[in-house]
Length: 61
Image (cartoon, rainbow, N blue to C red; front, top):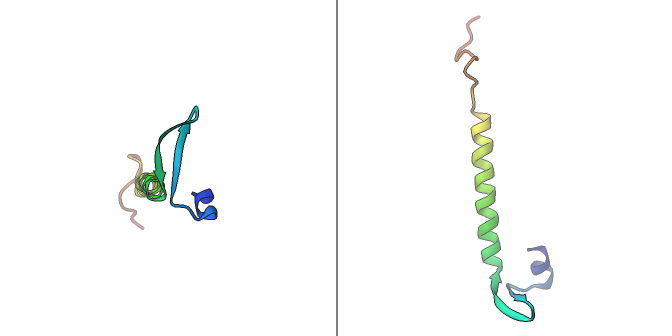
């Protein structure tokens, strides 16, 4: 994405052995990046809210 932003282009050709195989857009990369971050956030939230079974739910003073 950095290269695309620096070059101010939104689409890059995918070339293999001198033959065009397809195109990738900045939007494709952004959607992939968002989905990766969404998965990461979900795992982090689960970790933050995890209460080990041996930990009492409430502490009495």
